[in-house]
Length: 316
Image (cartoon, rainbow, N blue to C red; front, side):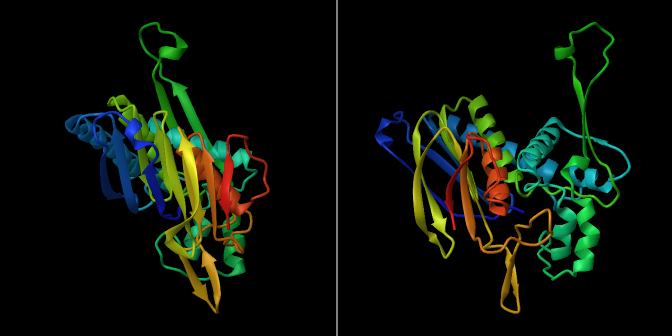
């Protein structure tokens, strides 16, 4: 599950925007607060666009939530070891991007880590200290390479080109006991889908923020403040973003302590142990899906090679 980090945002050179005042609305979603700001539209059209953005986020939650028994993610988990199940294109897209980052990060990002997260109690917030024997039993189930991704063109009676044929998407897990958790990429993916919905509704300039994940678009600079892990109401770094996203991963909201030692929810997929000696890491990237996933991967392994478009903003 991705940490909720406070981001402070304000417009720079606000007078350069269109005459219409910005419209901002906030709603509790995805276990945090989602805020959408739209510029350049009249009040009625802006609110219609924001409704479309919130609807897109709701759809991502319906498909990918670990907490909804009827989500496609949980249907995939329930069928582990027993073949692939049909999924929506968004589910396939998100999981495929997660697998891609898994490859690129050499396994530092791995959405099959749910069996380990369950041992620690991080998903349900029922915290406990697992034994090494329990971890050794769960770790063989953690391997993004065992995710089965299928995208098959559907046969149609009439002749049509390969590119125009509808596609059937399926996802499976190779072994019984495997489980997916998209907490390290899901919020960023939802932000990107909200941005797509806003743009489709005619918004040319705006910003979407979901906890510690944020994306601005429309050729305008936004100032973003990264919160101090010791005081989330105090920004310690301020950066300007232009048509890009920022995400922060940290261990300072979801954690528990035993015998004076803190165990945060960001777990190394290779060892099954929570990452120690680091409290937050922020990344900027072209999309929020990428910034979300890479902030998690680099929190786990800061030294791993990563694409040039992924830039670390702050690490503490």
